Image (tube, rainbow, N blue to C red; front, side, top):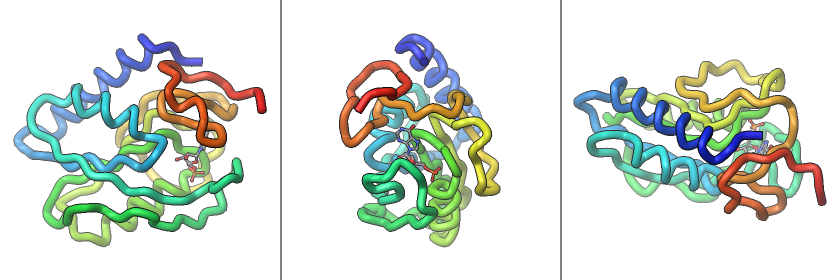
Length: 167
Ligand code: IMP
């Protein structure tokens, strides 16, 4: 669906945009485990200047393929974000419930600002009302794998994004 070079080019653009928006600040990138690991690793290297990195682990789908809307924090931030400019980095936004929950959760920790960034946004499926600051690609309503995204924990190491049709 999206080639390695298309991803690289778009991640470079997002990094430049964040560099410009965050001029003079040291943002904290908060990657959402595990799906955003590959994206956040590439994105942070496309940002010029210092950045901090932290991770949150959440359970949203579990073994299911549909969001329940219930988000449980499995691993919290290592460092306080009060007074900091936070950018939440997600792999894909489907219903948007996970990202909206995380946005509210982060906002409750007195940051200077909270922005949201997702590599992929599935078209026509968002039920949660949330403006996303940085979107890599809008994709058709298919289940996708690769570049960090999994189907039952597999295929995260693909260098490209593919539609998942198999078992
Ligand atoms: P939402 O809360 O409905 O927006 O779901 C977002 C989360 O569901 C993402 O962070 C992924 O973990 C997972 N997810 C949604 N769609 C896909 C997909 O196509 N492939 C892999 N994971 C997905």
